[in-house]
Length: 497
Image 1 (cartoon, helix red, strand yellow):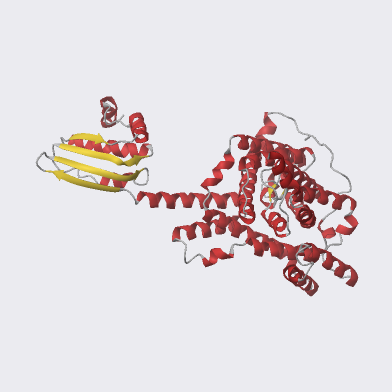
Image 2 (tube, helix red, strand yellow):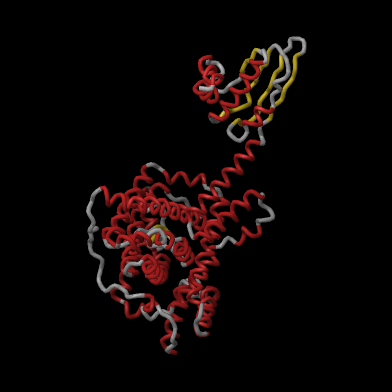
C-alpha cells in the first residue's frame, strides 16, 4: 500500500508533471535572478538555491506538487546581512535556518497551522496575489507599446488557448505563451527587455561550498538574529502555501514533514552556494494550473531550471520578460480569492476585519509573517470576545433557609472573568452562598483569581460559601492556584505582600 502511494506521488501524472515542470522552470529563472539582485549577491546564488530547494523538497517534502525555491519574502530579510557581512555569512545563516526548520519539524510545530483561521488564509492569499501583481509593474513602466502588446497577447494566449479543440487541454497554455512570444520577438527583432537583461546566467554546475566563516560564538551572534526570522518566515509561507495547494487539489499534506523537508533543502542550498528559500505560492499555482500534481513536477522544475541556465542559456536569454509578466499576471488573477469579495456581505464582520487587516498589513509591509501574526491575533481576540458572551450566571434565593444559589453556565477565562465577578451581589446579607459550577469550566489563572475574589468577598460579608459541581479539569487548576481556602495566602494578600 505504501509502495503504491509512493508510485502515485511520483508517476501518477507523468505527462502533466513534465510539462508543468518545464513551465515552472521558465518562470523561476527571472525571479531567482531578481531576488539575487535584491539581496545583493550574484544571480547564480538564487538560481543554485532554486534548483537545490526544488529538487530536495520534491524528495523529502510533505506536499507533492508544491514548488519551493528562492523567494522574495526570504530575500528581504537577507539584504542587511549581505550588505554588512557578505555572501559567506549568508551561506552560514542558510545552514542555521535549515537546522531550525528541521527542529521545528521534530517539535511538530507544523501542527500549529490549525490555529490559523480561514479568514487569515484568505487574507494571506489575497495579499500575495496583490504583491505578485505589483512586482510586475516595473516591467510595465516606462516601456514601449510593444511590451504592452506582447503582455496582452500573452494573456490572450493563456486564457484562450485551453478552448482550442484537441490540443487546448493537452499543452499548458503558459508554456505556449512563452514559446510563441519568444518566437514572435525573435522574428520581428523587437527591442524589448529579455531574461538575459536581468543578469548574467551561470555557466557551471553548482559545487560543494562550505561557508568560509570562523565557527565561533561571534559568528553565531551575527547569523542568529537573521536565521531565526528566516526560519519562521520560511515555514510560515511554506505551510500557508501547502494549505492552499491542499485546497486546490483536494488532498492532504504532512505539515511536519514539510518543515523537515524545507530545513534539509535549505541546508543543501547553503552547501551548494545558494540562499535560503521556501515554498512559492505563485509558482505552486502555476504548477497546479499547468497540470502538475506529483513530486515529479517539482523535481523536474528544479532540474530543468539548472539544465536551461547552464546548457541552454543562449536560448533562455532570448525569452521576453513580457511573456513571463503575462504568466505572473495570470498567477495573480488565479491566486486572488474573488469569492472573498462576494462573501463580505455574508460573512460576520469579525471575519471580514481579520481578512482585510491581514491583506493590508502584508501589502503595506511586504512582511508575510507580520500580516499572518496580526490576522491570527485579531482572530484570537474576536474568538475570545465571542466565547466570553456565552457565560451566564443565574441566581435564586431560598428565603426559608437563607441560602443564595448562583448557577454558572459557560466558560470562565481571562475575557469573561470580570463578567463572572460582576454577577455576584456582595452587599446582600445571607447566611450561606452556594456556587454551582456543574455547567461551568475554569480555563486559566485569571478565572481562578476571579473565583478567589468572589469567595473572599462573600466570606468577608459573613456568608458561608460552598462550591459544588466542579468538573475534574476545573478542580485541578483551582486546587493548584486558588487561595481562598489557604489562610496563609490570604494573609499575604491582605497584608500586601
